[in-house]
Image (spheres, rainbow, N blue to C red):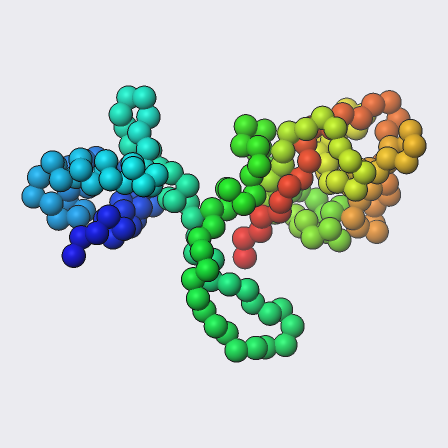
Length: 190
């Protein structure tokens, strides 16, 4: 039985496999329609549900539903407990991690000065472009002409950039400091 939900799942699978939206002809083939006409009706229904959108030229575009990951619950990191798996919801990592898409970008971490903050060499950091920082935030900053990632501390008028590794000394700007971004998340692939 073809329902909009199962048909939509096939469109999402196509998108993830080919990294593009299917044509109406491909949608008809995916859901085993004999012609494109029912595919147009299906797309209209999915647009009504907010699962698909069209751009100004009428091309289909993916929505947040194409990037969601099932959220099954929580896991105990202490003593083992019986696992109960239930689908709680779905979660878009972009929606969860990014609050200002236009000001957000990623950087790859080089160096070990932030390891005690859980930021390891090779990690990706998701940062939000911002020129001001609050004391305690991890920042991307240009200090006296060189770029670094450290914890921003401000006490009175004194600004210090603190590493999270005992091997390194705090940095006190000699001439100038320019905050470029605030670290919002760390991404690590195992």
